[in-house]
Length: 145
Image 1 (cartoon, rainbow, N blue to C red):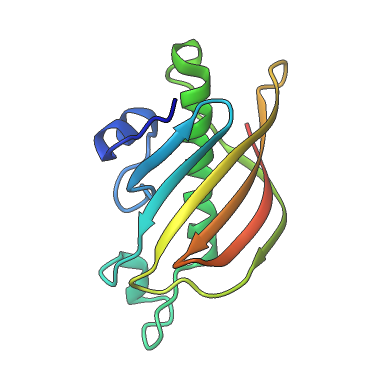
Image 2: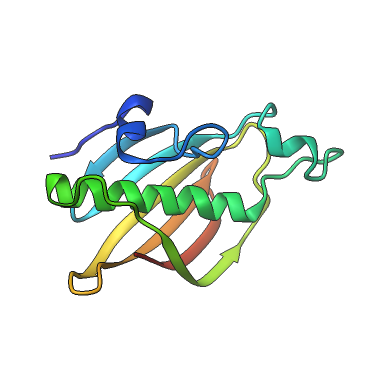
């Protein structure tokens, strides 16, 4: 069964708020399997004012943060009430490679896939893939605590 989440439901899971809440909605979630989130990138994002203002691009660290938030949502949906209130931290990224810049007008499709979990250490390993306007922007292996 696929689950969708609006911004209010996302805020119930994530502690982030504007300007650092970087997932606008979840269009598909299969707990324990995968989650597909959306970030609409608009020109009035605060980081565009100072990050190459003549040719604005979204900072790579914020793209990675959007992916980390996506993984936190997948972990929350997978655990349900069992781990309610837990905060998830990004602890590692392997093999991250940016393929093209993200610019105003892009829509990031943030995909987190559940690979395995080590309950003893509270570690969740996922593979994330990010696409914008049908071309791949980033692919990485990520670890989340």
